[in-house]
Length: 394
Ligand SMILES: [Zn+2]
Image (cartoon, rainbow, N blue to C red):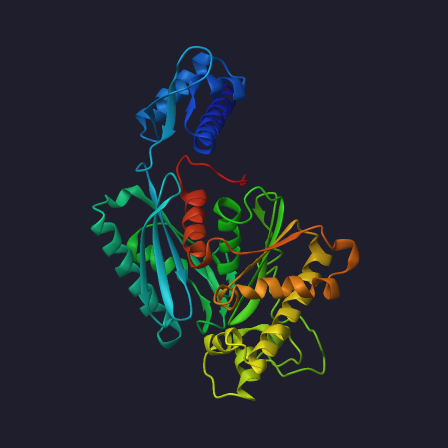
C-alpha cells in the first residue's frame, strides 16, 4: 500500500514538473511569480521545481527582469542547448537534415542531392547516418545530447513500429527503416508520413498556429492530405487517413498507376500536368509550364487554370468531410507557382458548397521546404525528450 502511495506521489511530482517546464517553454521568459499564478501551486513548490530544472540544465535564469508594477523578478527561460533532436526529410531527389535545439529552433540545415529510388533502403540509411554523424561532429555536440531522430517519409508509414509499408516515391515496401537508423547510430528514431509531419510543423510554427482544425493538402508527385484537430494529428486506423490521391473522381477517367481509373492524382499532380502539357509542347518539367503561364501563353494558362479547378474541388471535398477552419496548400506544385492559390480562390464560388463558403481560409504553406525537417525534429522532441513539452500525448 505504502509503495502505491509513494508511486502516486512520484507521478504527481513528475507531472507538475513537466507542467512547469511546458509553461516556461511556451511563455518564456516568465517569472516564478507568474508560474505560481498560472499553476495555483505554492511559491515554495514552484521554487523547488524551478531549482531542480535549473540543476538538470533544462532551464536558466535570464538577465531580464519583469517590468510593470510590483517587485522586479528574475525571468526564467529554457536552455536551448539542453538537448537536441534531428529532423530528416526524404524527398524524391534530395534528403534534408536539420538540427533542432531545445527551444525548437533549427540551428543547422544540411541538404544532399540524392535519389533514394535508385538505391536500396540500406544504402539510403547509410547515407543518412553518415550525414547525421558529420552534422553532430561539426557542431561538437556530445552524442548523448542528441535525444532522437525524426524522419518524414512520403508513403504509408506504420508509425508505431517505424516501418515504411509502402512508398511509391521511394519504391519501398515493408522497410523497417527506423530500426536501421537506430542500429547504426544508437539514437532513438521515429518515422512518419511526410504530410503528417508537415502539418504538425505548420501547427507548431507556421500557417496553422492557433487553429483548432486544420487540413493540409500536399501536391507534388502525387496528392495527399493531413488533418490536425486540437493539436493532434488525425491518423485513422492504420495511419493512412488523408491518402487522397486515389480517391475516385471519375470511374471512366484516366488510368492511374494504381490500376484504377479516374483517381484524383491523375487530374492534379505534377505528372498529370506534364502529360497534359505534352499534348502541345515538348516539356519535361512543371516549371516550364509555369514559366509559359507567367509568359501569358494560352495553353499553359489553361492547364494551370484547370489544375486550380481540381484543387478547388479537392478543397470542397475535404471541407465537406471535416469542416476545418484552415486549409493549407503545400508541395512543389504550389510552392513553385504561388499564384495558383489566387486562382483556386477564383474557382471557389463555383466549387465550394454554399454553407461552407467563408467558413475557412485557404493559405499557402508558410514553412515551404523546411516544414518537414522542422516537424520531424519536433516529432522526435515530443517522443524522446526525457522531460520536454509534450503536445497532447498521454
Ligand atoms: Zn490511383
